[in-house]
Amino acid sequence: MLPGGMKTPPDGNPPAARPDAVQREGSPSPPSPAGPSSTVRDATRAPDSTTSAEPISPATESATRTPSTPPDGERPSLYPEPAETRLERLELLHRIGLALSSERHRDRLLETILEEAQKLCHADGGTLYLRTDDDRLAFEILRNDSLGVCLGGTTGDPIDLPPIPLFDETGAPNLANVASAAANLKRSVHIPDAYDAEGFDFSGTKTFDQRNGYRSKSFLTIPLINGERRVIGVLQLLNAQDPVTGEVIPFCGEHKRTVEALAAQAGLALDNKLLLEQQKVLLESFIKLIAAAIDSKSPYTGAHCERVPALAEMLVGSLCETTTGPFADFRLDDEEWYELRIAAWLHDCGKVTTPVHVMDKATKLETITDRIDQVRSRFAVLERDAKIACLEAIAAGTPRAEAEAAYEEEVRRLRDDLAFLEQANVGGEFLSPEKQARIAAIGQRRVRLLDGEVPLLNDDEVENLSISRGTLTQAERLIINGHMVETVKMLEALPFPRHLSRVPEYACGHHEKMDGTGYPRGIYAGDLSIPARAMAIADVFEALTADDRPYKKAKKLSEAMRIMGFMKVDNHLDPDLFDHFVRSGVYRAYAKKFLAPDLIDEVDEEALLALRPKPFALPPRAERERRFSEFLPEYSS
Image (cartoon, rainbow, N blue to C red; front, side, top):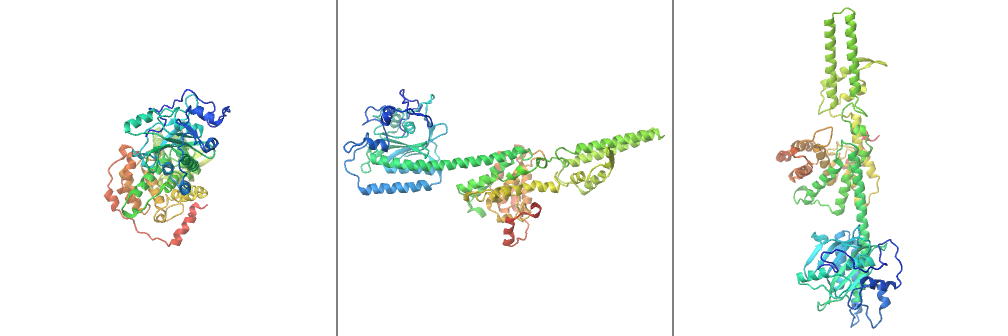
C-alpha cells in the first residue's frame, strides 16, 4: 500500500491552482469571500462531492448535514447503530486515551495510535507521518494487514520512502498529496474511492496496486494537532472494511468522528512525548558541551570526557547481555541507560574549577612558566663568577694553566649539575632517595644576585624537583584530586528528577576503591552500584591507553591490562567486573575503535584471570555508610 496521493516518485509538486487562503503556519491568512467550505472545495478541486475527495471536520459536517442527506462521501446508515455499540466505542476510546497517556516509548506510542485507529474503523492499513523541522512529513509507521506489510516503529525495518514536502519551492502549500493537504488545511480528508477522486495524483498508488494485486479504495487522512494548533503529524487510514462481510467500504461518519477524537488525544500525547524527547536531547547536548569544554580547556585531558562514556556504555552493555556469572541478572531499562549516559558525560565536570597551571603542569618546576629557565640563569651567573675568579687568580700570580684548569673543572661540575636538574625536572616513574639528596646538596650552593647572596635553589624548587613520581607535589595532587570534590558538590546540588537520581553516585565513584583507600570519600567501592564500579574501569583504562596526553606515552594494550591486573590484586578495581572486562573482550573492541594499531598487541588473558585480590578487612556497615555523607579530612577544607 503506497500512501494515498503519492506520486511515483513523490515529487510533491502542487497542482496549478492554489488557494491564497492556505499559507505557512504563523503567516497571516487573507479572508476568503466564499467562506471555509468553498476554500476547502477550491483547494481540493472536487466538482463532484459525492465521489471526490472531501475535507471534513465536525464543525463543517454538522453545518451541512440534514436528516435526509448524509455528509458528502459518507456511507449512509440504513439502520441506527445500537446504543451498546456506541457505548463500546466510547469505552474503547477511553481505554485508548489512558494507554496513550501512559505509554513512555515513542515508537510504541506511534504504533498504538495507528493500530487503535485501524481497529476503530476496521481499516486494512494505515500510515503515520511526523512533521520534521524542515516542514516535511516523514514516514514513521506503515502497515497493511492484507499484504502483511509492517514497517517502521519497533519493527526495526526502515521505510524507504522520501518525506512529503508541505510546501513547494515558492512557499506555496503542497495540496497535491492527501497527507500534506490535510496538514496544510488542518482538516480531515475523506476519499471514498481513490480511483474516482479528483484533485490528487494517485498514480503511484495505482502502480503499487497493480504490482501487488491490491485495490486501494477508501482513505481517511487526519492531521495530528498539538495544543498550540500546530500540525505535528498526520494519521492516514486505508480501506475501511465491513466488519461482517469484509467488503471494502467508505469510512462512515461515526467512525470518522471517533477517529478524529482519537487523533485529538493522540496529537496531545504525541506532542508531550516529543517535547520530553527534545528536552532530553537539549540536556544531553548541554552536558556534552560542558564535557567538550573541559577536554578543550587543557590538552592534558585529551578527549577523556568523550571516550570514557563510550567505554562505560560498552562495558555495561556487555554486562546486560551476559547470562552467566555474577552479573547474569543485571539489566538496565531505557531510563537507566539514559541515567548512566548522563553520569558518564558528567564524571569529570568538577575539572572546570581546576587551575590550568596545575592541570597542565608538564614539568616539576612549571607554574605559569617553567622555572627551570630561572635555574639556568643562576647557573650562568655561577659560570660568570668562576670566570671572574679565574682571571683574578691569574692577575694575583697564579699560573695561567693552573687557574684555567680549575675554572674548566668548575664549569664541568656546574653543567653536570644543571643537566641533572633538567633531567629531574622532567619527571618520571621514580626518583631515588640518592638523587633527592643530590638535589638538596645542589640547592645549598650560594649564588650572588642583585639582592645579595641566595641559595642556588629555594625551598619550593627543592621540594618540586624532589618529587619521586610524576610532576605534582602532594599539595598539587590534592588540588587535582579535588576535582572530584567539586564534581560531588556540583552534582549533589542539582535537583535531579527521580529517574536521574543516581547520576551523582555513578559519576562520582570512579576514584573510590574496593578497600576504601580511594577518594574523595574513602567509600568501599563494593557498596557502590555496578554502573558506578564500571565507570572506574572505564576511567582507568582510557587514561592508560590515551595517546593524546603531552605528559606521557600511551601504554600498549598488554601493558595497560597488566597494570589493571595489579590494581585488581591491590583491591583498587572490582575483581569480578575486571574479569568480565577481560572475558567479554570489551577492552579489545574499544582498542580497535580508539587505539592506534601499533598499541594493540597480545594480552595474556589467562594470567589476568588467575590473579587473586589481596584479602582486606571490611568494617561494619554503619562505618561504611557514614563515608557516603562526608569527605576525607584532606578534602574537607
